[in-house]
Image (cartoon, rainbow, N blue to C red):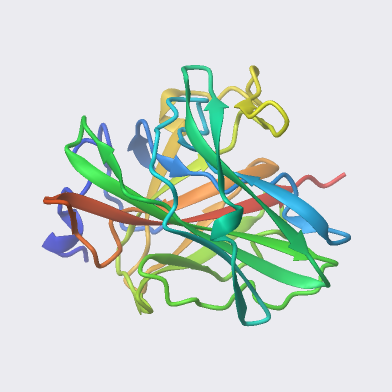
Length: 277
């Protein structure tokens, strides 16, 4: 049973409505979801080499507003338990959507050897004027080289984190993704989660979303899908289409205020589903 705490309106207007159901895979209507992107085209690679990440804070399912955020607090990669700081690799760019162009960031990295590379971005908090609160989305993207699993399921002990129970780079279209929402290593019961499909493919060279969507959702309710984790902080989502999907667990981090305003410290993870050919 949900506690009164799980009903607390942490996000102040981030949903048009929420339909609370007892199943962790219940859906509800959500609008204008914010997502910190940590995008590189291929999360499952045959070989290593140089890769580039694009990091706009935006609305990827609808090629929406690009929110200008101060420089990230940190960016690093974990490989076989070793952490490497990449913050100095982060550079400002301009990112364009169907709505506008705004400040974003990019970073480069080199993949050396087989295994999993867990990239973690901690952005600066963004002040959302319409909601009168700050949003900080601590984001993970896991890139694998050579189909050799090493680090993908390891918990990093982040303030806000989604720990995958499914390989996030090896999901079939029509398969499922399961994760556990955690805050400083502790599971977050009944965490509220938003899900979006990267429906407008990023143009890495031009720093913009594609003009045409990959597909047209049957209704606005499918632009952002909301669901709840169970009492153990675990959730499962069925992935209907190949491509990259973002999961954001809202307001689960321990920090609740920033510069005198409410702070929603979210956990984000990006996964990739593959078509069966």
